[in-house]
Each structure stands twice: as C-alpha cells, then as structure tokens.
Image (cartoon, rainbow, N blue to C red; front, side, top):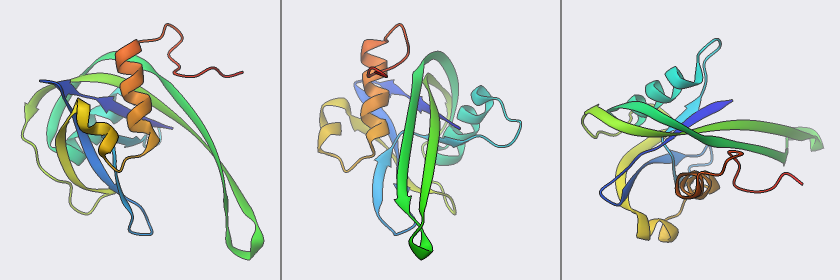
Length: 145
C-alpha cells in the first residue's frame, strides 16, 4: 500500500524521478509505501517531504489505483504482485524544492501540465492527473469490469 500526491500550481505538476533497481529513471508522483502502522495521510506528507523538500497538506482524496503485476523471479518462478495506491490532491504549505539523496528518487521538479505526455514517466502520473482532472465519484479512472 502506498500514498501519492498530485500537487499542481501555476499549470505545473510536481514530479519526482524514480530510479528503478536496474537503473532506469522515470518520472512519478511524489509518494510511496506506508510504513507499518502508518496512516496514509501521514505517509503522503512524509514521502513528499523526503522526495521533494516540500511540506504539503492533503486537501482531497482523489481516488485509488489498484495494480497487479506478474514478473519473473529466479529459478523460473513468477511473483504475483498487487499494489494499492492512494492518490491525494495536496497543497504546498512550506519548504523548498530539493532532490532526495539515498532514496528511491534522485530529482524533483515542476513540469508544465501540457509537457507531461512527452516525459518518460510511470503510468501513475497519468492516472493521478486523470483523477485530478475528472474527480470521478467512485475514485477510479477506469472500470473494474
């Protein structure tokens, strides 16, 4: 389970550049996994601070993104991964933009909304922005059928 923030101001969105285990780098929403016993609201505030230097206030729950991935493991087996990502709209309340060191991201930056489609990004960016734009009543971008 993880919590992420959509922070938009002046037609720009705040993103963090995620570094995969294989060294690949792609832009994502700031946020990440909950620690054991941590409330999702506390997690999103902590994660945004760690990854971007900003203090935020979650202002609205935008929705949920449930994913399932199957990927190969050693010795010919497969892992069956399921993730639940809680997406909030958040407002910057303080701090200064800085990059995370020693974490899962290496850069943080504001990107013009109209330029997001040209970025090398994870699908969560598109999901989060779609939730932010459309604010579906059921908190889901796509049908679960």
